[in-house]
Image 1 (cartoon, one colour):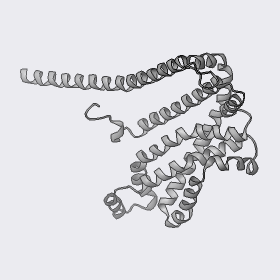
Image 2 (cartoon, helix red, strand yellow):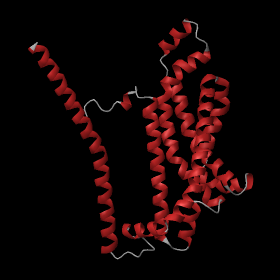
Image 3 (tube, helix red, strand yellow):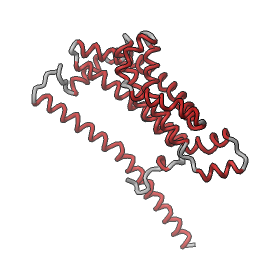
Length: 280
């Protein structure tokens, strides 16, 4: 009985040690970036004050914070336009990208016909063709959304193709020998195995979506944070421009972490979601 109690106590102690290590790891994952960010802001503030840099060249973080509070309602109003274009374009790119990746993987003909065009479209600088969207599509939200789709779709397609083609060949041979058709093989073997790679593409596209929406607003909109940023720079209201950039950045980070939360929920079994074995 004593040996059983000792074993149970050792298991509890080991479990408590693992729990403390996990809590410490999570705390460090938050603490170190916060310390780094605060240190950077302090250095920035001191540099601006020490060298007396004019606000129209480089405003201090404290000045940017004051402007953000002052223009907060306007920033949130413009963020709503940018967020809608970014989210709508991202969702469309996600659906089309995964579908295109599955089609490329399933058919050599589609691969040879579609993949080169995707590479060519990605190689063309997006900023160069952005003004042409006004000619082709028109001025406004539709042009922004389509530009965001073009900006986001390539990482989703490439990572989907990579993931679907990385399926275990022995496992594929086994399920085919058991009578599985192409759709069953895709749905039950290829897609589950490809999810980590697909989510990598999704997270890359999630950070590109606000960038695509803002660049679309530079050339094809009279609303949104991109348009507001352009107006602020044009009138040398640099603190307001920094405030707009800050809001855009926070929105992009929020989308990234949302994608990570969905990934953690969908594939909790994957090694990347279990944390480091060494607790680092």
